[in-house]
Image (cartoon, rainbow, N blue to C red; front, side, top):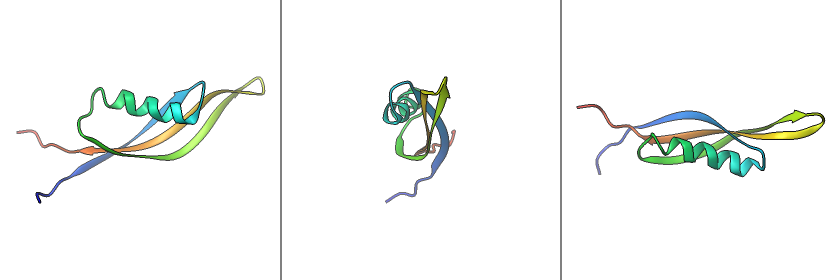
Length: 71
């Protein structure tokens, strides 16, 4: 098996509905510009509050993708 290298980045996704949708939004957006996404790990969840109510769910996600060297 050939050796592989992966890069890990952190993203923050947001949703007005849920943490799950916030995390999914981060992955959906990243997948538009990054190739070979492999693993996503939710590392932190928080919320923005306005007028005593939750206005936004936020999910911090570590995402790994296969690193390809430029030729």
